[in-house]
Length: 299
Image (tube, rainbow, N blue to C red):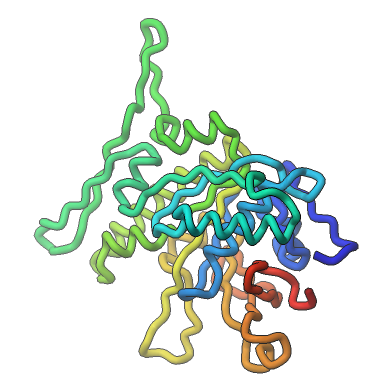
């Protein structure tokens, strides 16, 4: 970070610790809302999520909030060895002990586990006459007794994630990734789009409501969807038709163009910003440096 830049997390935004990325996002990751990031394999979306999580754990004098982060891990990218290495990298970068970082991790490799943590049991029916998949939700514990009266709650209020955020006041929830468990459960057929969209809506609605209630930032990673038949297709997020109406902002991380790599090295990344529709609003360049993380290309 340049000397003149002083990152700061507030009640409205969580700083990423990277000046140009904070500026791109109008102060950082917005609180009470959902932000998404998507990319191809090994480009850096999960690393960025972990970096933002670690920055949130930093003391307030360094720009963080000194609070733990909640992670919903659907890909197995938050095992102990990975986190130990992550903590080591950022403890050296920001000159803090590794004990400064605290990630509470929910393992949810299957879509049923992810949905269950948001307050419902999900059944996938693949025996329909048309051959397409149908989805059914059974909501958990939506009523409770208060004295002699029954009080009905929304499904998310009975969920594991709601209870954890209410108890621990996490300023940041990381879902890494949204696409993997859905892709595994729903084969890529046009007949399965309605069921897939239904599951997207359930997950995003639950997380958005929790984010709003507790003023928590939700940061969601996603895979890129790209046609192998169309070389002009630059890619879009998996489930774009569902995502764009639920996210405040969507970042697309791509490798730098050849001329950018010649100037800054192969670690250069283009970070594109989209909102509401898949129309590019702005683009910045960052470097993903070994044993350091995302940083300005000038660092």
